Figure (cartoon, rainbow, N blue to C red):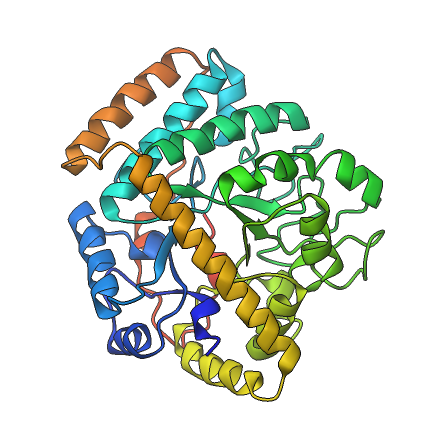
Length: 383
């Protein structure tokens, strides 16, 4: 079965019957949480526990985008976490980046969420592409490596895993992949000398890399995003010596979802080099996708070999998480302990930096359940 290489999203703060059946009968590799899944702290902890109880032999890994700033799924539980760009704007940037990683890691460990889909290690150009505003640590590889590395070590100290994104770099991209193509019009030498540096230096420490949907017309077909390109995925991951887990960004973003069916996208992403393929919005399509993926394996020896390799990568990543947890400080006893640590961190940060606006989008939109069949996609939830 190839269903154990999918990452899926669920619709709300509690499970539907369909979601229970999917987790119980065809357990995915991962469940990716969004703002729509975050109610009160106790509710989220119970949701994670229930899902894991449905597949006790091999429960899905839980993943969440908890960067701080505008991409902050827990902002209604821990308000005020900064964007990545804030760390370079005041005193003690490395120490505060690591402290932020620790605060986030403490929270995720309390919820039993294993993986933070952060940090962003894209490198900022003169202007940030739409969708990446203030999400990048800096405009040169050295500062991104230093600050993102500190953030990773803060996460790891709590037993929470990291995932670098968006490989092989979209900091100079032309647009927002949630809505359409983002083009990185630069040579392979330029990419290797700049955008790939943080992935090369931090990838194996993090243990996981997320492949983005950028296109690179000087390197490969101009209409093929990195998630579907073996040259840009497997080839460049191999070139930087990465031996961890590779996963796609959400395949329901319009930069890629408009190119083919879910089934074709899944096969192409796996063959390109991703080990886990994410479909985060339309849960009602998952059973058919799972069935078709399993059918594809019959008689397709190349895909079967790739699936076997990917499963080995997933198993190794689970062992990486187990080691992080074994070597970490114990999880806090209550969520109040997380809040207390967050307050200390935010007070220190705000005392050493210019005034910053706290980005809090409309509560009702964030909390609204995305019911199956309503035609929405992950682009409505990206913040």
